[in-house]
Length: 463
Ligand code: ARG
Image 1 (cartoon, rainbow, N blue to C red):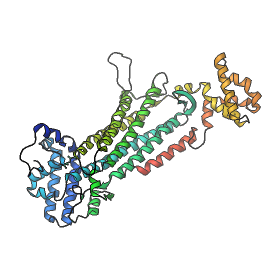
Image 2 (cartoon, rainbow, N blue to C red; image 1 turned 180 degrees about the vertical axis):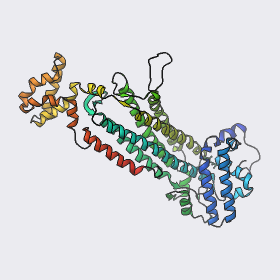
Image 3 (cartoon, rainbow, N blue to C red; image 1 turned 60 degrees about the horizontal axis):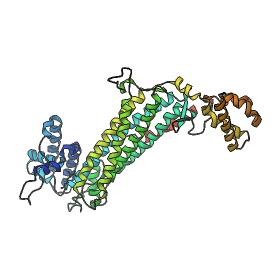
Image 4 (spheres, protein in one colour; image 1 turned 90 degrees about the horizontal axis):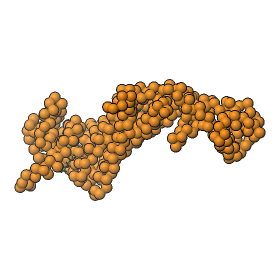
């Protein structure tokens, strides 16, 4: 059934009708559309536009539609323009002409955006729960690895020794910010548009605040025209998704590299890898590679929604129907990727020996040595140049850096003479960095505790 056509002489072109429909994808909003329609029926009753008895018949009829759809997928298979027409058509089969009264003063322009906001709120909560679980898993691994020494990298070259806990805490803090960003997007989505009509508001004396409370919205939109054309909230949500997926992709990249036999710091759980059809020895990190690959897809969704709205003036335009698939695809991709990453991190094995072996490349203590020299009174730039020269000599002659240092340093800093072996110990170098945010095990443990406290502040109430 079409919700319009009184002014038409002919039926729509078949190809255009198929092109125009959104029911194949906006049926995902069915539960939200029904909840909003039930709340609207109650609001119509409250303002005296329909009787209490009619409101109850509408609410019950709507509940039956949801039950039937859940029980029998074939119930959804009728030719409808969108989820809103579907609900009204099915409601008509149950309550007759009264179904049309549930639409009194209501436009699909506001219905579409109301249902999408409700869906985004629920999906944000679901994603936040997944993210909190990933964060807890990272924190647990970080604690386990708080004292394991590995090289930290810049430009993919070994830079300075760090603890593996420090590396895990780095990712943790990024995801803490992502969770906070998502919670902020949820707040922006949780605003009621219903009561806006097509663009001008409604002449019915609707109590929009009561309607907002009924649907669990925190606030009510302040301009009916803005309410039907606004998709900022959807773009904000997708941006929050982009940040999460981009970080997952970067973590995946590090895990792929550092779990390769050349490094061997981590072991990816076998259940998240696949083998090769030709090379019998292979166990490839496909789970991580797909997470990295899907980042492009989520970033694409953001571009899609931004470009979608950029040419639209005030008011609803059918272009806006294209918002939903971008949102659905981004949400689904990120929810799945977060779950896969949680499984991989939970099952990650930590090879402390391989980490330590790599960290024991003595050149990675160069900066630590230069700072120690400067603390003995040598100006830091001079100390930097001196250590640089020692490194060059060691490389040229093949003599160990420690031996070169033992010969040259005492002339510049006599006190360091007996301390050189300690300065060259990668583990001791990490333990020295006890500053807040530093790589020393106790600083890492404190940082991880801080991250947990921040997660608790955004955790959805239900979980
Ligand atoms: N299906 C549309 C959407 O998703 C809502 C319908 C609004 N249609 C209209 N003719 N005003 O945006």
